[in-house]
Length: 328
Image (cartoon, rainbow, N blue to C red; front, side, top):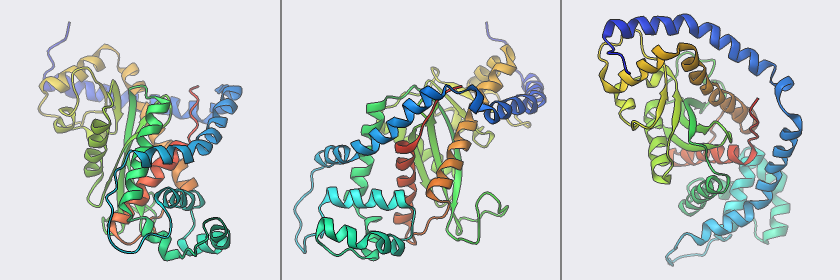
């Protein structure tokens, strides 16, 4: 039976959460720090081999993704590389995480030997605004999720990427849109794969709404989701149905409860510690962001906005190829 939640009761519960938050957060960090002692390393090695399988499967996924697209014949000069080749080249440049000039310096002669055409650094840059390549990568993203399967249990958070090498999103307290680009990524808690991603020049909230739109377009059901306090608003809560369990921390000055918040507060009232432990599963998002930036870089080198969006989407796709998730 649900208790009637008043504003006074709600604020008292927020106080209880705040008191327990530091303790649960510390316990969660201790688990993460000693994760090597808890993981089943045999299972980890088995799943790590899945990365090799995904990479080896990439060409066939690209061909399948290309077959899903109908491309009208257009006048003009034919492209140097066909769509499969362009997509493969784009993927390779993302894995290398080098500037376009460095990529050509490293691979120029090798690429010419394989495709028998000369590829310049400008050609690679133009791949970031190639709408056909974008469609193929979008299809590859969807095909991978269908093949692996998703659990329905997710966590999400926002992050940012710098446009300048002199500024780092994490360490700079004054984050201005002109210097940064925002991303939101929804991660599957069981597979560690991203199921929805969003990009914005405005804010993390704008990126969040775009990611949720992507999840809806894919037809993915959300059984549970853990989100940062930044997303604690009635507008966000209304995006989810009654069958979705929401784990996010209410703000201290909450004034209006409503049906959505009442459901959450009743769950908190039943077991605050359990609720917080579910909430702190969002730490997986932060860990994934950190791994992505170490592996694929924290700077977006592209100057045009459409190319910046493409670059950030490609990071999410690369994450899905290289992620290894083994629950403790």
